[in-house]
Image (tube, rainbow, N blue to C red):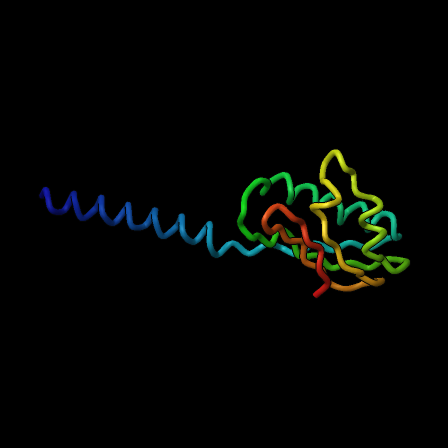
Length: 120
């Protein structure tokens, strides 16, 4: 009788560990889609950057925060993103974007206190 109870408890604990591992390591982020004029697309990208920075700072880890598909009316340059950063939410020295063009897929990632916006 005692062995059955221990076996049942061990089974429940093992199941909880397996579920916890699955939730934290195999979580698949749904991709976002943005379409609109240049200013709107920049605003949405920057808002995701602020969320990513706020969630992960001051951690030293590397995290992919978001994968986005975007379509803009005009090409988006790195300087456009940098010039529109709200320095009260994210310091410009901690923000490293790439030129994105008019459309495509991007990754917003956090690494060692810096936000990267990279075109895939």
